[in-house]
Length: 405
Ligand SMILES: [Mn+2]
Image (cartoon, rainbow, N blue to C red):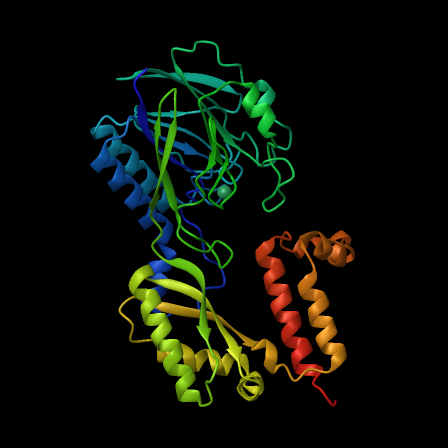
């Protein structure tokens, strides 16, 4: 069989509200507020220019179950543009935009196939032959049962079989666990490609057949950091090629500034300006956490005394002139290892903490996470959370457990 080429995207979260980001300047806020829509436009433009065999969208098109009306209008327009170029779309809804939500209806054009809440199949005839899709939309927000058992085995081997599945790999607790599946379950279906959605971090769970999360198309907060986009997939019976295409309009990220040898505040500001101007040249508009690393003890102590809000304001002002905006969301201070003027107990504490692996952290945090009242306010324990905890705890220890005190 000839190969097919398609776009695999998921988790568009159109109309995300970006709560808690209102401190941005007006123009920056406007850019951020519409960033999911603008990222979606980039995807549509890419499809129009490259005319793939089809576009596959695996759930969470909208951020809220009430489906923001501007977002719906924008999506409808995108689908219409694809229709005019005869590009088919195969899609399902996820937990965020499940079918029981209360939304104003927009009629989608005929090129779009939307899966209903029961698992079903849909055949699309492409130049390379038939492609059989299997999938379902979330009928309600909480689909906690495994849905894979309802997916039929691939029978006709002269077709491509693609599974659309919005759900969690069993054991991955970084997002709410919905429609959990195991890799072996997917493998047993003998499909050619598993188009996954739900987890916002881009990842390939398996190759041949590929099981792929493309991640979301635009980060929504500091934990959805780095470049975001979709995959352009070239699939044949022999091989799968994935090409990542970036769409994010405002990038969330962490930026490190080397602080060794910095004595005066103006040097700190210059180092920050230099680093962030390089960063913004390559990345474009961004919302970042700034980390000053390897600070000498004196500088660290002086900086640690400045209220964070004051330091933030000063640094924000210092990068106002950049061509693309870079908004500093938070500042972290890190001291050079050999300069720690720590008491022996403080040093032991930090060393012990640095030796902990993820599982150790889970044990340490277990009481908090199992507490019925606190647990629902906590984010899942993942690498990023642990890094941050470690950073904050080490800062506290360094501030309060100095040598000779
Ligand atoms: Mn999602």
